[in-house]
Length: 367
Image 1: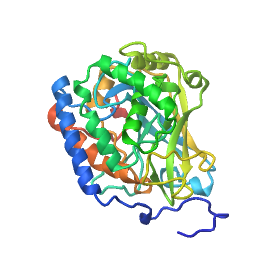
Image 2: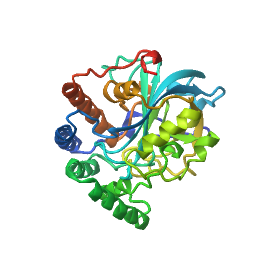
Image 3: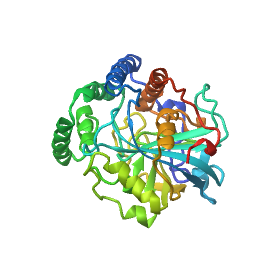
Image 4: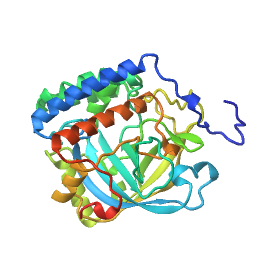
């Protein structure tokens, strides 16, 4: 793909930038079979269908996404093409596909549902007017479908592993992470990095899409950074000293405080330094700096109520493929997610007798 780098330094989207693994179909099927077994084991443990990843909700919020006015042409793409504001629902969570004590330090997640968008969708069966962005407090992920299959097979052991063992594994993993600062590519080292999360306050973390997505004419990874002073004061603050420490911290914060995050895009520059098919490679910020797109504002509110929890955990789903065609997920890991999220959603539907559905208006989100 040739281009004048002086006039356009960014990687242009073209279907040819995706190159599926030769055995990706077979590997994806093996992943789905493993996920199905994990779903069954988790259901037996909880007598309830839960998410295959980020099952534990840690705060349920409503707010507003505002797209900045005056963005340069290369940032005016997809949802961000026109300045304006959209209502949003945010579900904070912790990994993995189980509900455990917060003394086990695991990655933190921020799932954002933007309501009231218009435009062609990535999947023909998506009839909603919503756009989901799924972000995690780790910059990168497993490299591809093969690496994820190795990791997923280890996840099958989780429902039967006691908390004390997971805490011990986490302690060892944090040591491993210090030895291998960038555990690029290797699946079990990436698992160790996840289990070796620092366990800091979920509100002070930076969040990343981890893998690439189409950004209109370009290719990007997205991130959300805390900008309000009350949030920034929480950065790096430990939050793992109780079974429900994370949710307790979130509810206490939002009783008295509002929060603001800046949502940004890292635009890809080339497939070598900012790859699409290998999600384990961090996009270097000196090559692909984070460029501000807009603001996420969350007012002070009741961040956890029985009605909100039931709605967000059992009625809502968040899916990276519920999106505009202009923000289509890219790369091997994202292609696996297309099928994996559908499988998890179908399982929850069947087991809970509660049809998952998309909100048409923010008023559907309980107070």
